[in-house]
Length: 163
Image (tube, rainbow, N blue to C red; front, top):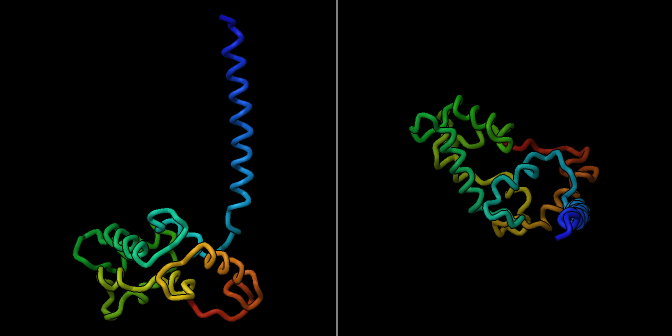
């Protein structure tokens, strides 16, 4: 057997893989969404349970239920202010969340029901047709509108988000 043959095969395979990887990188660049500073858009893939690029109310509820469980350190079924701060520090989606948005009873703590049943600001803002789903097209439109003057990310007045 020729001793140079295994080396030649490895070089051919390496060349093949390098060009395939380069092609994958080029395709990924074309397909990747435009960059954004909007934390709701940036954090959405975190809770897209089946990673299909469509964000649903059910996926949001499943996600916030897990976040609540993680934050409820004393397992009393409520988030106090310190537990809420832990969530804000641990999850970028909640970094600027206002506990008052969730605290419907205004009792200084957030129950599991209050936390999980509160609509996602992401879905409220982006689900234009009210079907409890945000599709890739709706995401793309949101990214585009934030660059328009007076749009969500433009220079116009913007109502403060609970997140």
